[in-house]
Image 1 (cartoon, rainbow, N blue to C red):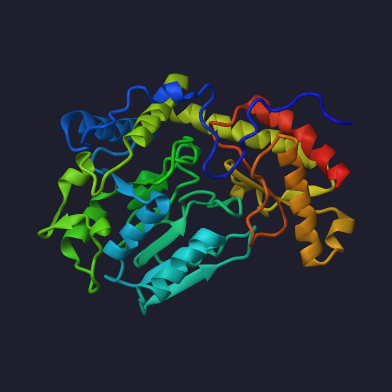
Image 2 (cartoon, rainbow, N blue to C red):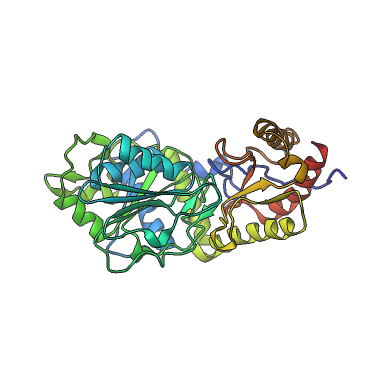
Length: 379
């Protein structure tokens, strides 16, 4: 039967993600526009993002936080180009972004002492084989596979290398273990539903020490420079950005952080994401045509929730036929206006990828589920 109830907000994209409930452009009225971001009002806004971020995420006082260009991608590249090369590197890839960092380390930085640990979509590499006396580059949550690290137990407290973590689809929805992480990057456009093009970097004291005591052998683009005259550029971590940020985006980030505070902070953000996942878990248990892409419950993402189609007849089709059918499924839901942009990543197994982060209202998730069955029946 065609469902009667529709999601109030059909935005289930994995990035940019849904705005917070109740968001309107009026949330941007306080933006400092038409003025220099280096003036006092602009810097105060930028510093407000940093301060509220530290408070909500419970980031240690001795960790540094900066707003940087080019979203999470720019933040990761900035850290890799600035810090890698001092020692050997272990890089983990089990989906497109982790594999992309591995390609850049090998093909662009051209480091020689690199070990890559890879796994197919749905799986994790052997974490116990990673050597944290080397530098380690990994994603906490694989956005395109829906597979996360289950915990940080595989990272020793006493280590000599840096752990560089792309946490863009994890932060604000999963508990990060800060004393196990030396570099954390993310963007505003994921769990908090902010606008794109700005990234965040969080640095431990060990990461700061690396920056101040190691000079990479390659030229450093201006956008990547966190050190001036052999010392950390402290202004960068006090709201003095390297280039001009969008103050409209900054205001939107502040609005999202204020919303997070108003609903109870990090614990409530995590609970909201977990509840969205639970609705899908209950649904999948009663269906024989669809399953999670993540092979274990412990590694199942609560943000970028990825599904594979398990129907017996579907699995007998050729790869191109399966991908065509999966596109038809996502397109039908888009045409009906009940779920936008939920097709699986192009290199992932054919299926669906549905965002379940904190800005997605649980009632919208509940309303979507019957439409998934309806759309499958119709294709």
